[in-house]
View: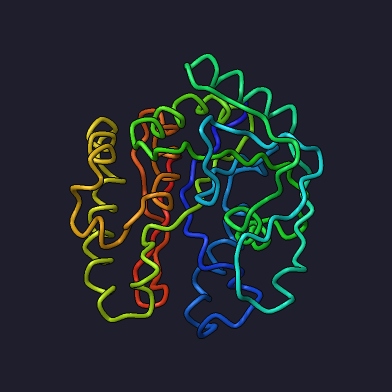
Length: 265
């Protein structure tokens, strides 16, 4: 019997960070190592990845259903090589239909997008985690309006896929204040929010859900997330967690701010 696959919230770093000069290599080395080891740490290799990226928002939950998704270089101001990166993973059209049926049954408005490419919330971390690009990958959007309860419900709807060989990944960052990166002023707020995040991850499921719905009341919440799109992939992952208690398998300091991963299962 296939084991239920985890649901994991990962920090995806900044832009195309592994492939350009974006600060000291030793700063990024922990994230590089964590992402490269993520698939190998699983009990078996997933048959597919479902990635909810912080860099895609739509009015309806939208699923990429192209068989060969292109690249979407959704960042600016980097060297030319950052716009020649390739991660040619196959799409997952059948999984998109399966996921859409689950979402429709849960009452979500849904749509398919056969033309959209993998954005950097997917392809940058997955170039490290799956360097051979040999696992079919479905990318799913966030919902405009950024309602935390809706994103918990989104994860609950997708949860059955974890029993079908699918690894759910929420790709964002537990600290995302562009004005704070590189500033000493980011250190203390990011650590206060990170402590709240760790307490939330290991809380009982109902308490965890209540805390995530009220995430803006957390210490330094808006200092760390002036806009919450990089946090909400955590809500999706948490919603998919059934009655599991989470862990914080990884954290590191990124340009002076603490960022963590959270895993269920």
